[in-house]
Image (tube, rainbow, N blue to C red; front, side, top):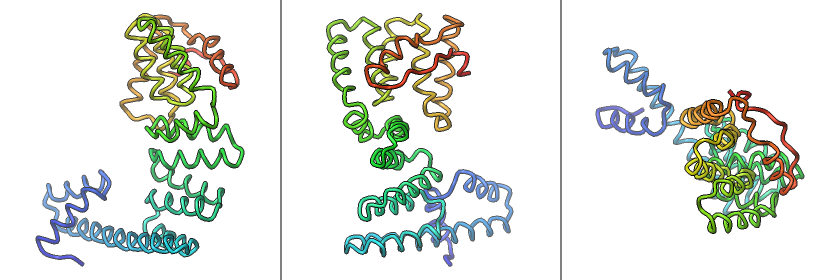
Amino acid sequence: MVGGADAYQVLIEWGKDNLSASEIDQFDKCIEIGNVEECKKSILDINNKRERHQTAAKYLKESEEKRKNKDYLGAIEETTKAIEIEPSNSYYYYQRGVIKADDLKDNYGAMDDFIEAIKCNSYFAYAWSNLGILKFNVGDKKGASNDLRIAAHLGDEQSTQFLKDNLYPDAQGLIDMETDQINKKKDCSENYINRGLIKEKVDPLGAIADYSEAIKIDSNNADFYFYRAIVRSSLGNLLSLESLLDMLKDLKQAILINPETNGNFVHRNFSNYLLGEENESTYTAKDLL
Protein backbone atom coordinates (compact mmCIF):
# COMPACT_ATOMS: atom_id res chain seq x y z
CA MET A 1 0.00 0.00 0.00
CA VAL A 2 1.33 3.41 -0.89
CA GLY A 3 1.17 6.26 1.61
CA GLY A 4 2.11 9.89 2.13
CA ALA A 5 1.88 12.97 -0.10
CA ASP A 6 4.42 11.72 -2.65
CA ALA A 7 2.67 8.39 -3.03
CA TYR A 8 -0.66 10.20 -3.33
CA GLN A 9 0.71 12.26 -6.22
CA VAL A 10 2.05 9.11 -7.90
CA LEU A 11 -1.43 7.59 -7.75
CA ILE A 12 -3.04 10.72 -9.17
CA GLU A 13 -0.59 10.89 -12.07
CA TRP A 14 -1.03 7.18 -12.79
CA GLY A 15 -4.79 7.60 -12.61
CA LYS A 16 -4.81 10.24 -15.34
CA ASP A 17 -3.56 7.67 -17.86
CA ASN A 18 -5.25 4.53 -16.58
CA LEU A 19 -8.65 5.44 -15.14
CA SER A 20 -11.84 6.06 -17.02
CA ALA A 21 -13.30 9.56 -17.24
CA SER A 22 -16.14 8.57 -14.90
CA GLU A 23 -13.69 7.26 -12.28
CA ILE A 24 -11.66 10.47 -12.42
CA ASP A 25 -14.85 12.55 -12.23
CA GLN A 26 -16.05 10.63 -9.19
CA PHE A 27 -12.75 11.20 -7.41
CA ASP A 28 -12.73 14.92 -8.27
CA LYS A 29 -16.26 15.30 -6.90
CA CYS A 30 -15.23 13.66 -3.61
CA ILE A 31 -12.41 16.19 -3.24
CA GLU A 32 -14.68 19.08 -4.25
CA ILE A 33 -17.30 18.37 -1.59
CA GLY A 34 -14.71 17.41 1.03
CA ASN A 35 -16.01 13.88 1.58
CA VAL A 36 -13.02 12.40 3.40
CA GLU A 37 -14.32 8.83 3.59
CA GLU A 38 -15.20 8.72 -0.09
CA CYS A 39 -11.78 10.20 -0.93
CA LYS A 40 -10.11 7.44 1.08
CA LYS A 41 -12.21 4.83 -0.69
CA SER A 42 -11.33 6.32 -4.11
CA ILE A 43 -7.62 6.34 -3.25
CA LEU A 44 -7.80 2.71 -2.15
CA ASP A 45 -9.63 1.79 -5.35
CA ILE A 46 -7.05 3.62 -7.46
CA ASN A 47 -4.23 1.93 -5.56
CA ASN A 48 -5.77 -1.53 -6.00
CA LYS A 49 -6.29 -0.95 -9.69
CA ARG A 50 -2.71 0.26 -10.04
CA GLU A 51 -1.34 -2.80 -8.25
CA ARG A 52 -3.45 -5.13 -10.43
CA HIS A 53 -2.16 -3.36 -13.52
CA GLN A 54 1.45 -3.74 -12.39
CA THR A 55 0.93 -7.45 -11.73
CA ALA A 56 -0.72 -7.96 -15.10
CA ALA A 57 2.11 -6.07 -16.82
CA LYS A 58 4.58 -8.38 -15.10
CA TYR A 59 2.81 -11.43 -16.53
CA LEU A 60 2.80 -9.83 -19.97
CA LYS A 61 6.55 -9.26 -19.77
CA GLU A 62 7.05 -12.89 -18.79
CA SER A 63 4.90 -13.85 -21.75
CA GLU A 64 7.15 -11.87 -24.07
CA GLU A 65 10.24 -13.60 -22.65
CA LYS A 66 8.72 -17.04 -23.12
CA ARG A 67 7.71 -16.17 -26.67
CA LYS A 68 11.30 -15.14 -27.43
CA ASN A 69 12.37 -18.58 -26.19
CA LYS A 70 9.71 -20.20 -28.43
CA ASP A 71 7.71 -21.42 -25.43
CA TYR A 72 4.46 -20.38 -27.10
CA LEU A 73 2.11 -22.30 -24.84
CA GLY A 74 3.87 -20.81 -21.83
CA ALA A 75 3.54 -17.35 -23.38
CA ILE A 76 -0.20 -17.87 -23.81
CA GLU A 77 -0.48 -19.05 -20.22
CA GLU A 78 1.23 -15.90 -18.91
CA THR A 79 -0.92 -13.63 -21.09
CA THR A 80 -4.03 -15.44 -19.86
CA LYS A 81 -2.97 -14.63 -16.28
CA ALA A 82 -2.78 -10.97 -17.24
CA ILE A 83 -6.26 -11.19 -18.76
CA GLU A 84 -7.66 -12.76 -15.59
CA ILE A 85 -6.38 -9.78 -13.60
CA GLU A 86 -7.47 -7.11 -16.11
CA PRO A 87 -10.22 -8.70 -18.22
CA SER A 88 -11.15 -5.41 -19.89
CA ASN A 89 -7.67 -4.71 -21.26
CA SER A 90 -7.96 -5.07 -25.05
CA TYR A 91 -4.19 -5.21 -25.57
CA TYR A 92 -3.82 -8.46 -23.64
CA TYR A 93 -6.40 -10.25 -25.80
CA TYR A 94 -4.72 -8.80 -28.87
CA GLN A 95 -1.30 -10.05 -27.80
CA ARG A 96 -2.62 -13.54 -27.07
CA GLY A 97 -4.31 -13.54 -30.47
CA VAL A 98 -1.05 -12.62 -32.18
CA ILE A 99 0.72 -15.55 -30.51
CA LYS A 100 -2.04 -17.95 -31.51
CA ALA A 101 -2.08 -16.69 -35.10
CA ASP A 102 1.63 -16.22 -35.81
CA ASP A 103 3.24 -18.91 -33.68
CA LEU A 104 0.63 -21.66 -33.26
CA LYS A 105 -1.28 -21.11 -36.54
CA ASP A 106 -4.51 -21.31 -34.53
CA ASN A 107 -6.62 -19.04 -36.73
CA TYR A 108 -9.93 -19.60 -35.00
CA GLY A 109 -8.50 -19.25 -31.50
CA ALA A 110 -6.78 -16.04 -32.58
CA MET A 111 -10.00 -14.70 -34.11
CA ASP A 112 -11.78 -15.28 -30.80
CA ASP A 113 -9.14 -13.19 -29.04
CA PHE A 114 -9.27 -10.37 -31.60
CA ILE A 115 -13.06 -10.32 -31.21
CA GLU A 116 -12.63 -10.01 -27.43
CA ALA A 117 -10.12 -7.20 -27.95
CA ILE A 118 -12.67 -5.37 -30.11
CA LYS A 119 -15.36 -5.87 -27.47
CA CYS A 120 -13.08 -4.10 -24.99
CA ASN A 121 -12.08 -1.39 -27.47
CA SER A 122 -14.15 -1.15 -30.63
CA TYR A 123 -11.71 1.42 -32.09
CA PHE A 124 -8.75 -0.99 -31.97
CA ALA A 125 -7.80 -0.82 -35.67
CA TYR A 126 -5.08 -3.49 -35.49
CA ALA A 127 -7.51 -5.97 -33.95
CA TRP A 128 -10.03 -5.31 -36.75
CA SER A 129 -7.25 -5.66 -39.31
CA ASN A 130 -5.92 -8.95 -37.96
CA LEU A 131 -9.43 -10.33 -37.60
CA GLY A 132 -10.11 -9.45 -41.24
CA ILE A 133 -6.89 -11.04 -42.47
CA LEU A 134 -7.62 -14.26 -40.58
CA LYS A 135 -11.17 -14.36 -41.96
CA PHE A 136 -9.66 -14.07 -45.43
CA ASN A 137 -7.27 -16.93 -44.61
CA VAL A 138 -10.16 -19.24 -43.63
CA GLY A 139 -12.22 -18.33 -46.71
CA ASP A 140 -14.65 -15.76 -45.31
CA LYS A 141 -13.99 -13.04 -47.89
CA LYS A 142 -17.15 -11.06 -47.15
CA GLY A 143 -16.38 -10.93 -43.43
CA ALA A 144 -12.76 -10.10 -44.21
CA SER A 145 -13.76 -7.21 -46.46
CA ASN A 146 -16.06 -5.77 -43.80
CA ASP A 147 -13.50 -5.94 -40.97
CA LEU A 148 -10.62 -4.66 -43.09
CA ARG A 149 -12.69 -1.70 -44.30
CA ILE A 150 -13.46 -0.81 -40.70
CA ALA A 151 -9.74 -0.97 -39.89
CA ALA A 152 -8.97 1.17 -42.95
CA HIS A 153 -11.65 3.64 -41.88
CA LEU A 154 -9.94 3.82 -38.48
CA GLY A 155 -6.69 4.75 -40.24
CA ASP A 156 -4.87 1.42 -40.64
CA GLU A 157 -2.92 1.63 -43.92
CA GLN A 158 -2.01 -2.07 -43.83
CA SER A 159 -5.70 -2.90 -44.20
CA THR A 160 -6.05 -0.65 -47.24
CA GLN A 161 -3.09 -2.38 -48.87
CA PHE A 162 -4.39 -5.86 -48.02
CA LEU A 163 -7.78 -5.01 -49.53
CA LYS A 164 -6.10 -3.83 -52.73
CA ASP A 165 -3.74 -6.78 -52.98
CA ASN A 166 -6.05 -9.63 -52.02
CA LEU A 167 -9.73 -8.74 -52.24
CA TYR A 168 -9.87 -6.05 -54.92
CA PRO A 169 -6.80 -6.57 -57.13
CA ASP A 170 -8.32 -4.42 -59.89
CA ALA A 171 -8.97 -1.47 -57.59
CA GLN A 172 -5.55 0.22 -57.82
CA GLY A 173 -5.59 0.13 -61.62
CA LEU A 174 -9.05 1.71 -61.68
CA ILE A 175 -7.98 4.31 -59.11
CA ASP A 176 -4.93 5.15 -61.22
CA MET A 177 -7.11 5.56 -64.32
CA GLU A 178 -9.39 8.00 -62.51
CA THR A 179 -6.38 9.83 -61.07
CA ASP A 180 -5.09 10.37 -64.62
CA GLN A 181 -8.48 11.84 -65.55
CA ILE A 182 -8.39 14.12 -62.50
CA ASN A 183 -4.90 15.32 -63.40
CA LYS A 184 -6.11 16.16 -66.91
CA LYS A 185 -9.24 17.95 -65.72
CA LYS A 186 -9.13 18.93 -62.05
CA ASP A 187 -12.42 20.85 -62.16
CA CYS A 188 -14.52 17.83 -63.15
CA SER A 189 -16.47 16.62 -60.10
CA GLU A 190 -17.47 13.35 -61.77
CA ASN A 191 -13.85 12.19 -61.89
CA TYR A 192 -13.55 12.55 -58.12
CA ILE A 193 -16.85 10.72 -57.69
CA ASN A 194 -15.71 7.86 -59.94
CA ARG A 195 -12.47 7.48 -57.97
CA GLY A 196 -14.30 7.78 -54.65
CA LEU A 197 -16.70 4.98 -55.56
CA ILE A 198 -13.73 2.67 -56.15
CA LYS A 199 -11.93 3.85 -53.01
CA GLU A 200 -14.99 3.06 -50.88
CA LYS A 201 -14.02 -0.62 -51.10
CA VAL A 202 -10.37 -0.23 -50.16
CA ASP A 203 -9.76 3.25 -48.72
CA PRO A 204 -12.84 4.77 -47.03
CA LEU A 205 -10.97 7.84 -45.80
CA GLY A 206 -9.70 8.44 -49.32
CA ALA A 207 -13.26 8.12 -50.63
CA ILE A 208 -14.47 10.76 -48.18
CA ALA A 209 -11.67 13.07 -49.34
CA ASP A 210 -12.66 12.57 -53.00
CA TYR A 211 -16.33 13.25 -52.31
CA SER A 212 -15.32 16.40 -50.43
CA GLU A 213 -13.36 17.57 -53.47
CA ALA A 214 -16.38 16.89 -55.69
CA ILE A 215 -18.57 18.96 -53.37
CA LYS A 216 -16.10 21.86 -53.56
CA ILE A 217 -16.54 21.82 -57.34
CA ASP A 218 -20.30 21.27 -57.34
CA SER A 219 -21.96 22.00 -54.00
CA ASN A 220 -25.49 21.63 -55.39
CA ASN A 221 -25.37 17.94 -56.26
CA ALA A 222 -27.37 15.97 -53.68
CA ASP A 223 -25.78 12.67 -54.67
CA PHE A 224 -22.32 13.84 -53.62
CA TYR A 225 -23.42 14.55 -50.05
CA PHE A 226 -25.27 11.23 -50.00
CA TYR A 227 -22.15 9.33 -51.12
CA ARG A 228 -20.09 10.91 -48.36
CA ALA A 229 -22.79 10.08 -45.79
CA ILE A 230 -22.88 6.45 -46.97
CA VAL A 231 -19.16 6.01 -46.34
CA ARG A 232 -19.40 7.57 -42.90
CA SER A 233 -22.42 5.44 -42.02
CA SER A 234 -20.46 2.26 -42.85
CA LEU A 235 -18.78 2.52 -39.43
CA GLY A 236 -22.18 2.05 -37.77
CA ASN A 237 -21.91 2.16 -33.98
CA LEU A 238 -18.21 3.03 -34.24
CA LEU A 239 -18.99 6.52 -35.51
CA SER A 240 -17.56 9.21 -33.29
CA LEU A 241 -19.91 12.00 -32.27
CA GLU A 242 -18.15 14.36 -34.67
CA SER A 243 -18.44 11.92 -37.59
CA LEU A 244 -22.08 11.21 -36.74
CA LEU A 245 -22.86 14.92 -36.83
CA ASP A 246 -20.99 15.25 -40.13
CA MET A 247 -22.99 12.36 -41.58
CA LEU A 248 -26.29 13.92 -40.46
CA LYS A 249 -25.28 17.27 -41.97
CA ASP A 250 -24.56 15.54 -45.29
CA LEU A 251 -27.90 13.71 -45.27
CA LYS A 252 -29.83 16.85 -44.42
CA GLN A 253 -28.04 18.80 -47.16
CA ALA A 254 -28.72 16.03 -49.70
CA ILE A 255 -32.42 16.04 -48.79
CA LEU A 256 -32.54 19.83 -48.86
CA ILE A 257 -31.21 19.83 -52.44
CA ASN A 258 -33.28 16.84 -53.57
CA PRO A 259 -35.72 15.23 -51.10
CA GLU A 260 -35.84 12.05 -53.20
CA THR A 261 -32.11 11.63 -53.82
CA ASN A 262 -30.99 8.01 -53.85
CA GLY A 263 -27.34 8.51 -54.74
CA ASN A 264 -27.68 7.31 -58.34
CA PHE A 265 -27.31 3.61 -57.52
CA VAL A 266 -26.91 2.76 -61.20
CA HIS A 267 -23.62 4.66 -61.00
CA ARG A 268 -22.67 3.05 -57.68
CA ASN A 269 -23.46 -0.44 -58.89
CA PHE A 270 -21.40 0.01 -62.05
CA SER A 271 -18.41 0.51 -59.74
CA ASN A 272 -19.44 -2.63 -57.86
CA TYR A 273 -19.55 -4.48 -61.18
CA LEU A 274 -16.03 -3.34 -62.06
CA LEU A 275 -14.78 -4.72 -58.73
CA GLY A 276 -16.77 -7.94 -58.89
CA GLU A 277 -19.08 -6.91 -56.06
CA GLU A 278 -22.79 -7.61 -55.75
CA ASN A 279 -25.22 -4.81 -56.53
CA GLU A 280 -26.40 -2.69 -53.62
CA SER A 281 -30.10 -2.29 -52.93
CA THR A 282 -31.41 1.17 -53.72
CA TYR A 283 -32.34 3.42 -50.78
CA THR A 284 -32.70 7.16 -50.26
CA ALA A 285 -30.99 9.67 -48.01
CA LYS A 286 -34.13 9.73 -45.87
CA ASP A 287 -33.66 6.01 -45.16
CA LEU A 288 -30.37 6.69 -43.38
CA LEU A 289 -31.86 9.28 -41.02
